Length: 141
Length: 141
DNA sequence: TAGCGAATGTTGTTGCCCATAGCAATCGGC
DNA sequence: GCCGATTGCTATGGGCAACAACATTCGCTA
Image 1: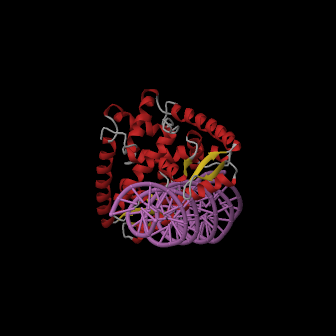
Image 2 (image 1 turned 45 degrees about the vertical axis):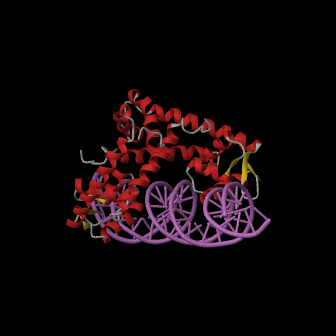
Image 3 (image 1 turned 60 degrees about the horizontal axis):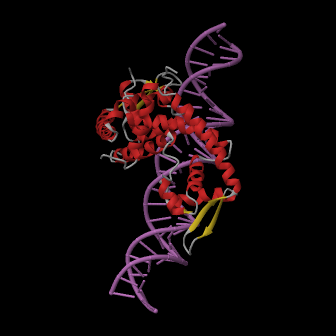
């Protein structure tokens, strides 16, 4: 074996995320959605009136980077923003946004099924908890 | 639970890769190396005289994107390129490059130990094979 | 041996994602 | 009423990857 990299989980993690990300991005592109936008739609639907800042914290996207993201969703007529008070704005899906959210969810769930099918059965149930432990303060650490 | 995302392995994969990638990038930055450069060093050491194109195929980096990567390694005095024939060039580590490779390997292995320590023991052994199955044509597919 | 398709290294451009610094306005607690 | 914290935003840059295009060279074949 002349590949010293495949024994590193960190390297495999990066490669796997790249492959999976590219695949999902391609499918979401047919809805003219990016991954970050799709996840924003799902999260807004689950948390109506959420603040832009709060949404950014949940997605781990900085406030500054939320601006173009929300602008694109707004321009596409998928979300509405209205002032909660003088400095915060509440986010809501429009009817069109909720329709789009449904389509995105279909795409994502189909993708996830195919993704998980690629991992051998004996490892399958371990993948999600292992991954979650890597980025959430989840832990039994 | 108001987070519909954490049940998706694909989403967790992306988040985990981001966290791990940022962490590793920060450590490698102290050697003035990027992740792609560090992996190139390891691979060149294991495959002397490898071609730029072949290296790109192994790392899944397009030929075009190898150019600035190799240029930076070359400018830093870490690799040497010499013509194999009129169109291909063989890559080799310089002595300095091999020293750097050693340091990078130390950093990476230390990082990997800490990374894998974050996942609960019962899932630990499943992570690498599961991830590898996701991006390698490894498969029983 | 001449020719032609494939491979190689390269340039240039684009896009996504993330990070930082800074700013004006507003909120909230003392 | 004041001041620190928060919010939304602008501007800028870096890392990484994708694509198209190009000149040169290789290798097979007719």
